[in-house]
Length: 185
Image (cartoon, rainbow, N blue to C red; front, side, top):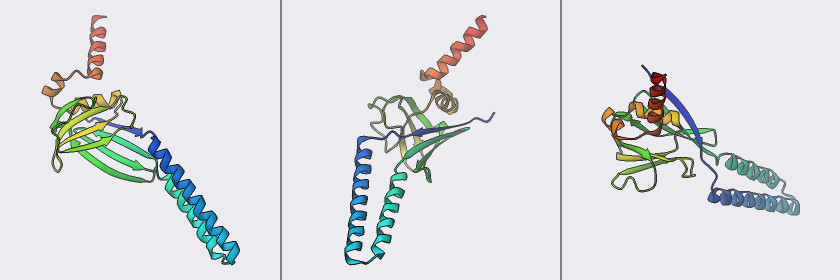
C-alpha cells in the first residue's frame, strides 16, 4: 500500500527579519527620495525612472523574504523543500526512512555526533522534532523540523520496525489505544 502526505510549515517572522525589513524599507525610500530630489534639482529626469526602479526592487525583495517548508512523505522517502517568497523552491534534503536511526521530540540535547544538520522548522521551537538518519552524501544527518501528527505517523510507518518498537511515538500510541477501545466495545 502506498503512503503519501504533504505538510506546509510557514517559518515564523523573527526580530532579525523585522529589522531587515525595516532597514530595507528605510534604505530604499531614502535612496529613492535622494534620486528624485537630485532629478528635480539637476533636471535629469532619467533619475526618476531609476528611483522607481529602486522602489520596485525594494518591493520585490520584501515579498521574497517569506519562507515556508514543505514536508513530503512518499512511501519510504521524506523530502524537505524550502519555498522562498512563494516563488522559488529548493530541495533541502531527501531522506530514506529505512535509514532512520532516531526520531523524537527535539529538546536541544540530541545530535552530538552528526556530520550535518538540516533545520526546517517553524522557528518557534514549539513541537519541534528531530530525526537522525544516514544520508548518502552528508553522512549521519540530523533533521530538525515541525511535523504535525499525521506527518509523524507517516514517518513512523516508514522507519524500521525495531526502531518503531523502541520509540514511544504519541501518534502511534493513540491509534493503538483507539483500536483497543474499539475491540473492547
